[in-house]
Image (cartoon, rainbow, N blue to C red; front, top):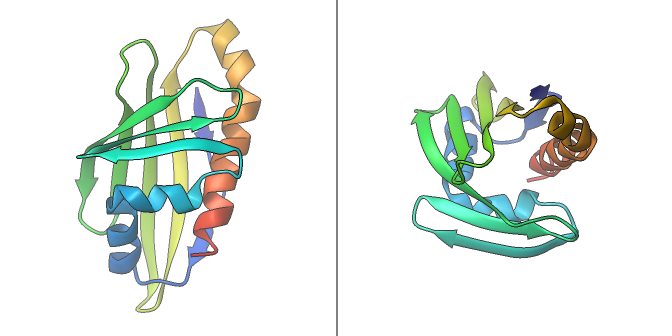
Length: 129
């Protein structure tokens, strides 16, 4: 299952946006208002939203200034959240969040709408930083 978020313009250079997203504690600023838990531990963070199980994301890889890939820490759910960062000019960049997950058809039907909403919220909040 793939969900591509809308592209958002961030009023930071490509390098500044990359550095912001590389600092995992900054993801707390992007989370929905329903967040109940957020903790950073090394190269990972765990978050919990109201009515949802807690999820741990690990920084899997990054390509300097252009890409950051976070992956699920649990082998039960295999997915990645990828931030693609493109330069517009020296003071702004464009970011798109992509979610790529391997779910059975039943699970995909259940999680597609809330995941799309989650990606949209992260994207909207990223445009405000």
